[in-house]
Image (cartoon, rainbow, N blue to C red; front, top):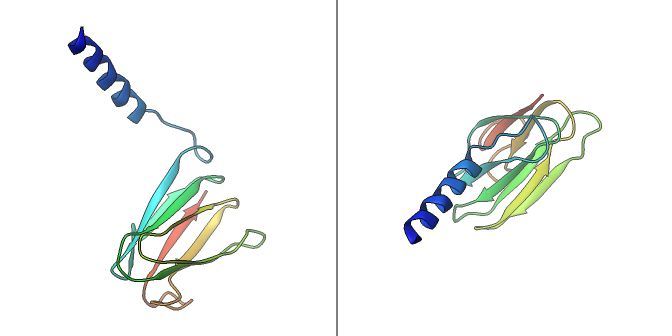
Length: 116
């Protein structure tokens, strides 16, 4: 009986990981800030989709972005271990960078998020 219950639990966990959601809403994506870089360096998301930024390094970083007209701006400082999220509400390309380790022109610690 225990073996059957364990097998059923594993099957449910596996199926939960296989679910898919349409572009936007619901599902989020993760970005890691560490060692003066964003990982991944490029990301594609749907309109309405959220991205969570996690500082897994020892240094303080910012999540700062240039946004398409009409979208809310983002400028958040993250200490080591900190996290923040942003929901992309408009289509376009967002330039995300760390003000401490980069500049607004893409020289240094930065990434691009394409929203479609």
